[in-house]
Image (cartoon, rainbow, N blue to C red):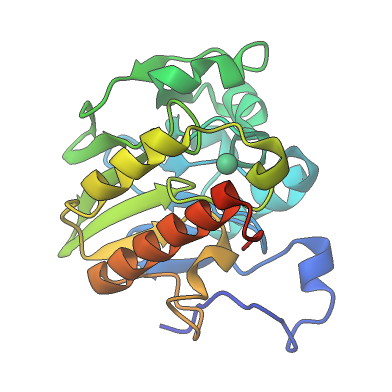
Length: 246
Ligand SMILES: [Zn+2]
């Protein structure tokens, strides 16, 4: 697999500033359609393409072009699954829904984040499963970063995938503008370790470098557990005032 996230993109000068990245099929049937700073994924299902998150509004044109680079007409999107409601992950949902009539879905606790932007077709409860043909996607609630944030777990071919979103942070801005709940995150983190998956996919490319220096977006379960422990440590540092880790 050639695709990887770049911390410093020497091969493509300016790509970080332009917030651009490759579109690539990172697992058969799953495309990376996000930007340099923001992850978004496109999952092929028997009921049409399904997006996981929609990036920030300021990269709208690039994001729609990424979908096209994945060989998909943006007007054919069937559903948008949101890991949570922050604007950098849901910024283009209204546009995708307008173009395609896609059904927007999000954890029930994060519905207010989309209010006034787009209609929520389905508010997901913890453990709820959404099916697209033979593809079953489970919503794994992981309150902390936001009240209704969570992860999606599904099987694609031989691979069990987990889209982790921002369930483990980042916490950099929360240090001054914490919109989450630290106690809820601690409880979620313990449960997150029990998620049975082979590949864990981040919500921001830079989330993975502390456990995957080579930039491979597909974290193993062992890397995932290490990542959770490091995020718990980072949160304690923030709360204790000892520092502002990324
Ligand atoms: Zn977020």
